Image (cartoon, rainbow, N blue to C red):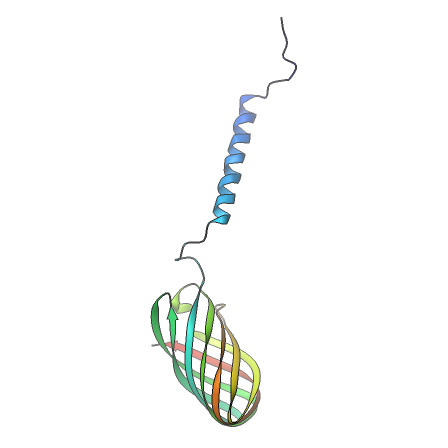
Length: 159
């Protein structure tokens, strides 16, 4: 009676290996395909006009528009700053907000540490992050007279 030199694996081991291989292939495919738009984080374009003034403590208010997934969302901005603040400026900022899962994530309280200088005209830049993980990077010109080195809290509310 002839014998097979290689022992045969039981049928259950073959099925388990096939199942593991299929599971690994599905996992690899899932990791390489992009997330669906409803769950993915997206970036939005931001435009803001803000007026600020202060002496030691400062304040500001303004409005802007978020363009997110092809739609525009108007919002209001208000904020306070503590530190060295002297002067008054008007600024227009443009930039991007990232980490938005849904448009409601954009509203909230943002924190920033920074400073700036303007004598008649100048440049302004800010990097902000809110409690929902949305990050904004904005820059643009400002006009007025200002010297600032402070900690700011900015609140954004969608209209």
